[in-house]
Amino acid sequence: MRTPVRTSSERTNASSKTNKQQLENRRSAKQPRGFKPCIIAYMRTVLPFKIEKSLNAFLCLFRFFTELEARHQNNIFIDDISDIVEKHSTSTFDPYVKYCTNEVYQQRTLQKLLATNPSFKEVLSRIESHEDCRNLPMISFLILPMQRVTRLPLLMDTICQKTPKDSPKYEVCKRALKEVSKLVRLCNEGARKMERTEMMYTINSQLEFKIKPFPLVSSSRWLVKRGELTAYVEDMVLFSRRTSKQQVYFFLFNDVLIITKKKSEESYNVNDYSLRDQLLVESCDNEELTSSPGKNSSTMLYSRQSSANHLFTLTVLSNHANDKVEMLLGAETQVYAEDELASCLFPVAQLTAQSIITMDEKTGAQFSS
Image 1 (tube, helix red, strand yellow):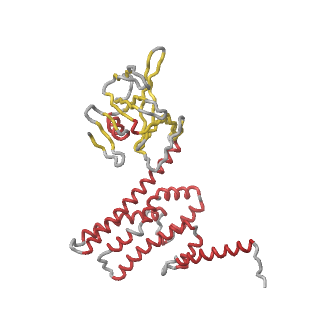
Image 2: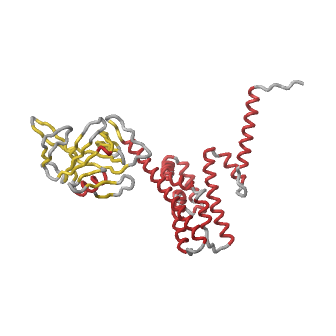
């Protein structure tokens, strides 16, 4: 008897059914016992594959609270939970870091949906009014994981203080405290890094380059300071020199300075930029300066007509065009010129002949040498 030959479409359908069956078998094998497998199977069916990782993260945290609840059921007076905290903080608490890192996106997405999607707003209001939500807004539930993770070190620190140092549980408690403290630090670092990246994208969208564009957005770059100062420019008028004022807006990052002219509250024209290690700031102690702010100029410049109380020069050793540029800048108050600008805006600022203020790029700590 001859075996019937299947067409290509029949072979494709059979292969598709086999792949689907294998996928369902793998998913069924992963279902946790005792946690309503039918619901989990349904969620895995309706949710995309990528979101399945979020579901697994939820299950990991669920097991943590299940163990805490089980210990409470065994004895209403819980003497210690250090072993449970240590166990899960070293293995299953990574979702906290990811959640806190993306918190800024969560809030922005929620606000966008509320502002642009009437159906979402209506459904959310109906859910929030449910008695189980106790009339609490959605945002209060979004911040619960962050509130919970920040309380863990406080809890473990209190337990350590109440545990006798000669007790075997004390060492476990100390290890648990160390792990949850590390967890909170990672959460803070992730949130701070994401906030910085978000700000970088915002600033980059506001800059209009009139020169060669600079690739501003980088995961290792962050904004240190921004602000507007007065620049004094020397002009030639009928064979005489005259000083005019211009407003210049600076964006100082940890590794680069962007020099712009402000067009509006959310728009800036970029005139120049330079790496941070190519900057030098020197204060001007009197009105008569020994050099003009123009490039490669050695002409005397008098600033008696300037309205700023405190002047200083910014020397760009190498700008976007590999040229040396000098700028005469003015600040209304000495505090701004010597404190905020010299110690925050620039890495090295010579205030006097004896004192040099520098800034640690990572911590922001200031020190004198």
